[in-house]
Length: 314
Image (tube, rainbow, N blue to C red; front, top):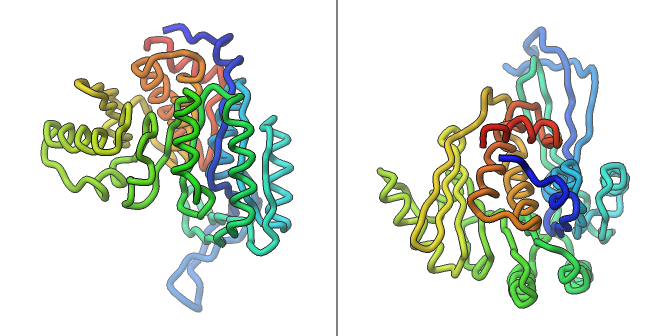
């Protein structure tokens, strides 16, 4: 399948949700601490990457499309760093600073190419700032071809029901990466993209493909969704729509790190739908993109040449 790069480059995608700064400390591990049975990491280098909804927007921009991001950060060093990095990635920012919170940071300590520890710093934004972000959404949503709501449970999507309703009123496909066990707040979305464990938390366990499909279709119908996409790690991903299901087997050659893979899936899926692709084509390409990104360390993106190669036999 030949990707229509012209249509992809002309697509405009609005991303809304929880942003975070992913920090990585890389070092050498050569001994165990005398204070506790834990490895001692001698840090040799550090990296910073966009995380959460910012990584979704980064994936869209990396494929040459127009990405706009609405979110809230703290008025601190990490928030300023995140804003600078958005500009470097050519992402259009609509960022609101909340002086009462700290920017969400995920600090990962890596030794011998393995993640040893993750430390999280996070706060919930206040309602006044969230109302300002909602106002931006009302202004920007009609100007975009698709809307992605990236929910990491950090409070940035407090008004998600209003956002979904507004998007659908204006004929915009709205994709949601869900969090938690209350999916009623996503009712009316075009598609939600839970991973296997997230879906199991909401729908319960299954013992066959038939039982999985029945649970997926029941949830899709109860939430008035056009589609439900369950990403299933080494089992690929499955799309459920009214009267049909589509299974795409995994395309990963080697799984190195699944961090941010869900961001790549929903970013590519949303970009494909924004460019005019149908669901089958969009899911196929998103699956290939995920197969590329899990072969990289940490939150990463897929570039056009990588995606083109991955889709040569689509």
